Length: 555
Image 1 (cartoon, one colour):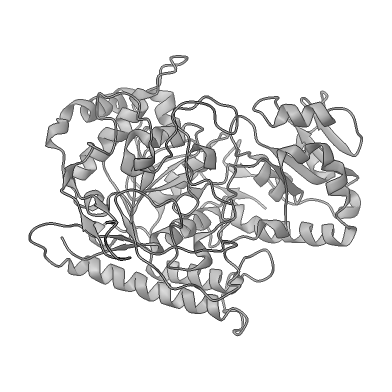
Image 2 (cartoon, rainbow, N blue to C red; image 1 turned 120 degrees about the vertical axis):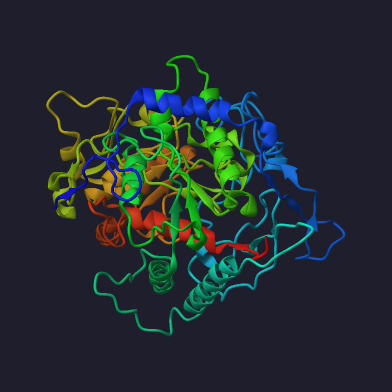
């Protein structure tokens, strides 16, 4: 199996990008100085009145964007507080032992999924400036969520003295309301309907929380979903990203979105969501001064970019950023997104670093798979693997000793057991891929950050992934039933790894391995993208979160 994805980016629909460093820096300079913060567009903040009944909104006065939404063009680091949805603690260390300027609230069960009910959204940790309306509970045992309580649709209502109807927005919301209804019906009737027909693929089986509802939702997305990519910004910082590196998921998505024809629209009035096409990886390369430990230029670039968009267009302000999304696979994605409080708290953040201890909120944010691509071609050697009988090694890990999890793993298992083969470095001449192909289970411990490319590498090679860590929200977990094809081990259980994995019966292991092969299609990088692959699964996760937001058609 060979899938190609050229590492050339276009600006807009297939345009050829000329990425000059001088041009990039000139544009960044323009962003920093062009707009006076005092001339920002107004946005509308909402809060629930304590004296109001549920679903009744209490408006506040309009406030200039940035007064509660970020640090300003020249301000210092934003220390997130409970009022802006990132928790009330500043400073300290996160779950990976890394020094952070903020810690996150909303540390939910990683398997809590917004797909349990097409109308369900925030449960306990509501984002600021938006109110949550009660939603009907889903049918019992819907298969999408393990949560006992469910929230409602986020309703964003701009409040001004003279309201006028926005017919186009009302039409968009009507279409989404119909999609919610269809998906809710699919959730209720998952056991009473035959699988939907599909010329390419029909999701079935226990690898999905609810295969029927997922398929119905996916088809609704293909029929309805429209994405607007802001044209502002020049490569390489905007409309560009790495295609070959541990951060390649970021660049591949940006490239695929630039080339997308089916769900991308050039008319923002027809868009359900708006993509902010900046690359934090490229910012680090082009703007960050190495070893300076000063990320303020990156945050300033993001803040000023949103400032430009919110001044030029009405869409950011009308939704408080709730129908906008950013995407980053860089470790600094969560922190750089805090440049704007609305971006951090309200927008859909698609992040590889899906760490609940850094403010990742599974009900609005999307976990982005980390895929380490070393070339434009996914070679057949890294896809597929031998049968269970040809895998003599019980478990395998080789990797750097960093973060709080791996030292524990290495201390207990490094060079101590032939069945659980754990090492920091492989002997010269030994192939990492070949050892994975000989292993039944592939250990995927968190490092400096919670995400690991080993999860997808294991899936490619049909090695059952063993995720070791406590705060990582696994990709597509609102759709995929990870417990059916992977093992999750907490850090305190590392000494018991062999007992846990040896306790999986041969029959159960064969089932898990077969399921890994089934879900592999959802993590494949194809060029051009194909239905149900990783690009479309990312879009589907964004689609689900957009279904949780209802904008009122009044300007």
